[in-house]
Structures are given as C-alpha cells and as structure tokens.
Length: 172
Image (cartoon, rainbow, N blue to C red; front, side, top):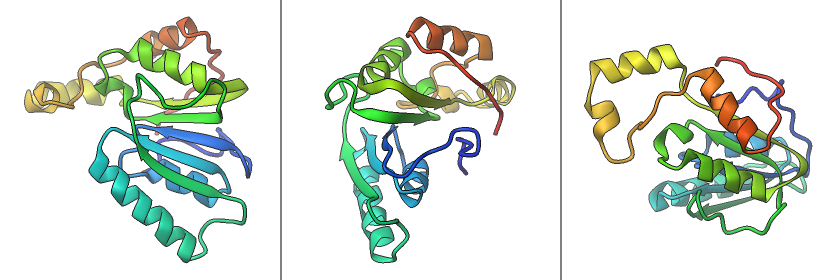
C-alpha cells in the first residue's frame, strides 16, 4: 500500500528522488514508474538486494520510462552518503517512528534536499498505533520496533523546527 498520495505530492519525470528507509521499495518503484531518478536507501542489506532485483526486473519488463534511473543502496539515515542539495524530493514513509533521533533524520533530509524541494513524511496514525501498543508489548519492545507514537501537531512542530514549511496533511 502506498502511503504517499502522488495526486497530492506530484512527481515530474527526471526528479531526483530519495526514498529514505525504503524497506521493500513500494514508493521507490512507483517513483521509478513515473520517470524519476530514484535512490532507494535502507539500512537492511537483504531488503536492498531485493529492491535492486525488482528495479532490474522493472527495467527489463519496460515498466520504467526512458530517462528513469533506479539505484538501491544500503545506508544510514543519520549520515546520508550524499552531498548537500542532492534531491528534488525525499520520501520517508513509515520510518520515523523507528528512529530514536528523529530530529537528526529531519536535519539530514533538509541537508540533502535542494532549495524548493519537497519531503513526504508518513507515520502511523495516533489512534490505531495506540491500540497496537496496548495489544502487544512485542510490537514496540523488539529491536527495530516502533519507539514513539506521533500526534499530528507534534510531528508538524518537529517539521517546522527543521526549517520546513508543511503544506498539507492527509490520512491513508
């Protein structure tokens, strides 16, 4: 399921996109299909190898338009291996609730974003997340599990503190 609504967060062919914490690659694949120059980055090497295989299969099947590129790489969201102002778009979907230093991740995204660029951030909704935490300690006490539940105003405040200007929200 895509948690970024591309009708509200448009992508132009040729946009340089970072899918940060890409996991299995769902958003990276959609950006690739839309003609972007995609970098899918995750700390999980196994998932990155799978994403790379899918990128190759998509290219072979003709699912990506001319000019689209796709790279899958292992990396750390708190120390992105890119120069300043490298990307037109950054997507971080269902990742921030896993990272202790969420302000550090926001700072890194801002650093690699070109002036005038856009960031899509998705996190679980507060209510359903609260239920999941109540039903299972394992949900949030395992390594790599969710370590926080965001309220919308809290997340928007952190986004503003990072120097970004939110322009819309929605629920998926």
